[in-house]
Length: 235
Image (cartoon, rainbow, N blue to C red):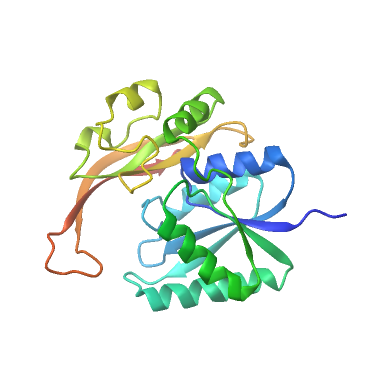
């Protein structure tokens, strides 16, 4: 019996890398696509800020075709849902029936994903669900994966964390109120090497930039600051 065809919701960071690795090891699904949301104005991965060129090189190094959802600069939830649904519908038309996520413990996010995909006939898969985040990061390091922090919440982490490698020292330096995998959005990463890569991705780090964002639903709350570091592809 053929394995179900799936697409991996790919952020370019450690959580989706861990989830993809677990799925490939388990060998129950045929992963046909990596699916990433990209801000089309800035040509960068949503939330992470990684440039499209590095995302494309990363996908080639993994060896799974990349699909992108092209988002406007500041999409409403309605716009996001429609664009995502349209893309998923095109994948369903190619008989992809399962959607894989790297979520770990955020119940509301899982429920949102399930409610969005169920009407499209897509089943959700969460290979990291409810696993200990500290142990996940330790396993990630021990398995030979390498990743760098590309952005972090300025209210929770100082500028110096932006650009750090994920290693045991990084884990030891994290404040107690920051999840080891940044599951609450404390930091995001770019994974550039490891068992699923044909070869490491060469890159260099540029300047750090502080950007501020208004709360998406409550404008009376103070803006959130986020440190980003520019990641550049080495020629």
